[in-house]
Picture 1: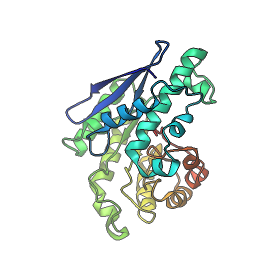
Picture 2: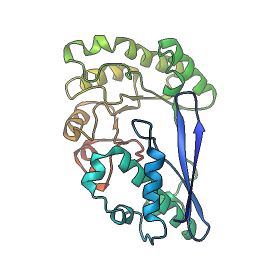
Picture 3: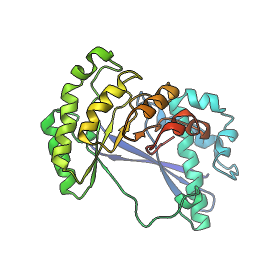
Picture 4: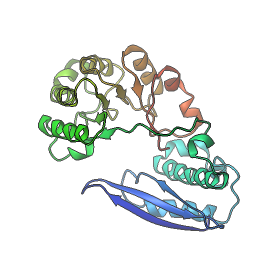
Amino acid sequence: FQSIEFAAVTVNDRVTWPFALITDDQGATAATEFKYSHSGAGFDRLFAELFGSLKGKQIEVESDAGGLLELGIDRLRADFDLATAVSALRNVVIELQCQYAGIGMTEALGGAPAESIALYANINHSVYKRRDTYEFTRAAERAVEEGFDTVKCAPFDYLPIAPSSQNTIEAARDDLEQVTAVRLTAGPDEQVLVDCHSRFDEHTAPLIAERLAESDIGWFEEPLQPRDDPEGLARVTRQVEMPVAGGEGGYGEEFFAGPVSGAARSTSSCPT
């Protein structure tokens, strides 16, 4: 690594997608996207400090980055911001190696190259101001009009985390109606995905999944936080009918080889 530059794409007044552009000693440049810290402050500085520690060092494989920074797996798992920064740097190493090898990242990571990749429309960011059924419906309608055949929503963001089993369905009644509205708007030929953002627990998640099954959703994403309770999420996965996705906040190969991956029938993309 020789130089670093930061860039950002403003999605709306709430969401910004940050990037780092890193250039090596031969002039090749790779971009990596990362998520800002939970506090929203100091992440660029943290990333730049880690970059400085790696600057000028020879990195043979991307997994060497953590070792060169003298950061153990336990520390990375305990610090989401640090893990995100190291993961982004590891992505840069892979991307630069791919450029020199003339191959794509999918092939470098052991996958089969594909001519195209299916995308979905995440409508959550466009409805955060008025999170009502009408706005979810309009967002789904726009996504379908723009050619997406898969729509993802996160209707439970303002639901108290892990409400009791007794009042879960009642507390989530409006949110479930939003999913129904998205399904009706999208039509029977479209996929509807639901992200729960870890708002449930092992007891309440199957109740919600049973109601969501009525809308024929494509996947049930992260009803529990897999970093905190992977065994509980694995048990939920075995109980529900639809595929379970999750793990975007996990770090390290051991995390993805754990109990959740053994039980899950689907996983979402994972930035760390």
